[in-house]
Image 1 (tube, rainbow, N blue to C red):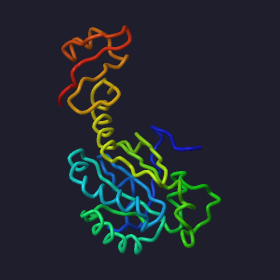
Image 2: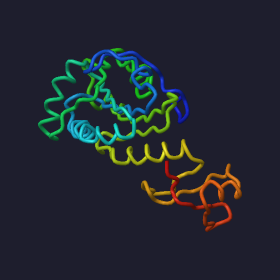
Image 3: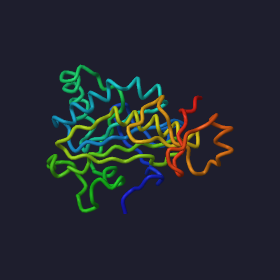
Length: 219
């Protein structure tokens, strides 16, 4: 059964380019983005890892750690990092997990149990489904999961936008509408009465009986 939103993110211990980690301990009391790659030295993934390195400060401002995983050994990741910097201009300082036995890819159900136990000899096409993004909250629950095809580079600016929404809606009883960006109006959840909404948000508009719109809460 596939991992779903609000399932606990499976814990694991692994070697990374920054040394051994335990995933849940590494997350600590903040947020985390785990994003996976089917193979080292692949063109689209090279651009993605570099772009994420360029966004590292933006994630840090949101108390969010970033970590990559590719179905190859750590030694291969270390060599790949230079190519990533050459191509994108960004040095990858966040950890890259080695998964040469495919254990974590299977744990996160990105590969079937029948995939074998070694990355050796596997092509990117063999690992095509190892193209996922997981956002994990401080409670170690999965808040978002996305899987992309190998030919489509991921939009990590969208992941930042989602984290802004997740953190806002975790703190306040609101939801964010389509195309929402930080600072724009939000939707009051049905769990809030009109009286509470008036007191909490200082008023709202009601374009339809079931929709109440208000300014984004601050703080």
